[in-house]
Image (cartoon, rainbow, N blue to C red; front, side, top):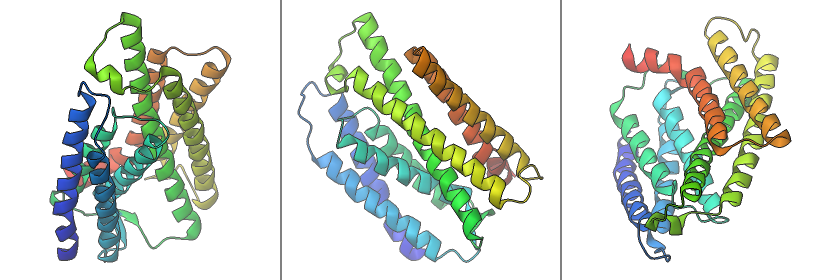
Length: 265
């Protein structure tokens, strides 16, 4: 853990520095943005990955605590947003994911790590967990894009011009990415649920029932949203609502009982 802690501090500082620099760039009146914040974020994600690897190497309990899973998800979301930024410039959420990643790796230091996911599992069960994590990560990003879509739509509708608008991507591009993310996330969630029914003997047993019901409800929410958007088109506000309900159900499915058990109790 000593080696891991030595990586925590510079990684936290890099995330914090990148988040502040990107926030300043977003509100800057100039269209050109320095590459330094992005380089800082690249370096932070490398440190973040080192923390994940070192934590798992030093893990002797054969379990992953809730904070460790949150750190892993934060890394997946940050890397995905960085990759997406290469195709469409997006200064809205890069500072958000930077600061949230800094928060999560800080929580891993100070929050007690008690029980969690057993690492010593069958291949099928591990596949189910990995698919679930990827589905949650992708759909979390889709929620961020839904918020951005709603914000841009509001700006255009009310013809509000601000310095921040210079850094906003085109509305149709955001809607296209949002739809793709929802499709990919929903497919991953469906596969994760199917793998759960295959590799877990009883998905409605104690400890699994609420996860199964909430995850299945989230899948139905996203599937319904995609169908309605494809056939009739949904307004930005309604898409945000669907994404909010879906990501809330998934968060409760995975982190709800774990938060009460590990943090509160």
